[in-house]
Length: 329
Ligand code: HPA
Ligand code: ZN
Image (cartoon, rainbow, N blue to C red; front, side, top):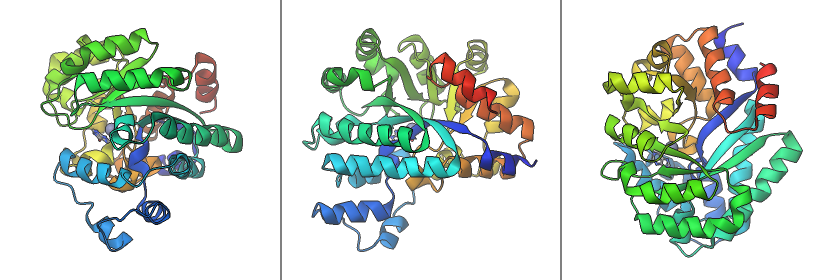
């Protein structure tokens, strides 16, 4: 079997996906109309033309603007169901979904509205397609630590629905050290810590995520490659990296997919996984991320199998379901 045929049909997991980043322009226009909110673009085509990013911040500006049309529980439900529909079509059997409460609470939307809409979709996806999922509540790092503490407090009534906390948004100038106290408190509350690090920021931020936030996974982590002793540590600790190839090229962190370091990461013994990050903005869902890497990097069937195995191995699934899914490969 070719690696491309294999990846299209095999059951797989996604570990790095921002639900707000799965907001397709068509659904955005539909919800905007329903909520009588004006979008500063005449048409879906015009909006899509704006998806040309020079860096992470260019993208974030549009991503937060797009999220503005999400008002009601039903909107968050529709958004999440649309993502699960893609999972069902691609045989993604498990997904770990990040959501950014502050993107919504800052606009006056209640935490409960956001999480209840997402939760309703999770339950439906599980019963309709057997897709398991869990939630990673991500703190926006361009905001203050105090703001993150407020978010942590608001999450506590929904603690049973949230597995982990993450750290996303503008990386440069907002190091993990800024959030050490709120991560300590989040772990005490029972959440698993993860963080975006080394996407645009330096290898130092990955050291901080490991040493100060005690993360269980690094989101992205590409810039570890500039620091050999850091690579050694990540390999020795079997620290997974949730790599997002099409995100890296869309945000110009990698110039072309043929220069993506995914294969090099595997060669070094790093526990890389493939993920879509913000698929509505970066040009493809999970399978497309794999397919583009298979073609551009000439990944072997063995390498693709390793990536798929990693997606389960480094998930936060209970051991029983994890082993059950790995056995199906
Ligand atoms: N990086 C940082 N923050 C984000 C991203 C990303 O790729 N997507 C959504 N928030
Ligand atoms: Zn991300």
